Image 1 (tube, rainbow over the protein chains, first blue to last red):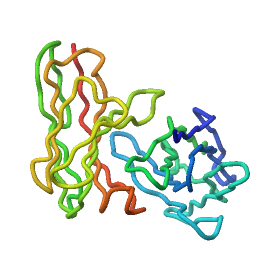
Image 2: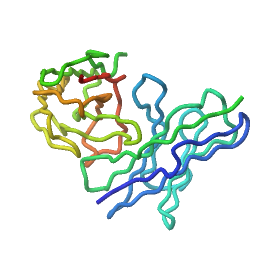
Image 3: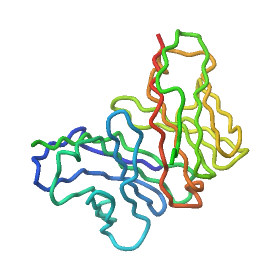
Image 4: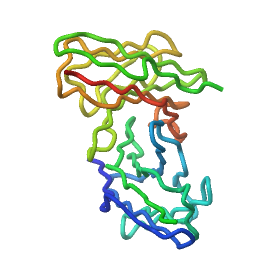
Length: 113
Length: 116
């Protein structure tokens, strides 16, 4: 069965520093990986996805993610954090053969001014 | 562009009461989903509809029913509400079923439901 893990409940980063939000996954087939962001009292918004091709994927708001097949990871990164990046981030995965996407439990990102 | 619209935004129910959560999308998407979000649990899929006329159970379907009324609308019904169903409920839609497309899901802003 497919699964996704976000090992950190919360990540604190100083403004201007690089940030990383971790995600690892398990699927039986080829993985399709997504990152979403949730701001307070709002629904999830799509940031980026990996389907195939280059391991480094660029998305919205300056975010990027690196797919690592050997480590089964898909970490979200940004070179320079902004206070406005503070939000809840979800990693999601689906098996290439399934109708469903499985979401991680979320990581709360705090950017400190 | 309304996207995915959920009604109501907030609701308080007593145990045993019934209620229907409404969801409509204006993006002509084929697939629609209902999730619940609980602290520390992330999003869990309740039911989904891969296309008009079909519905399937997700991870946590017990205590819920759904209706795909037409291509635009997908409702979630609690027949006899229980305190364990206190949660934030999100509706989402996508162009196609994930099995056939890698397009992302679009989410509504949620319904915050409290069961006393």
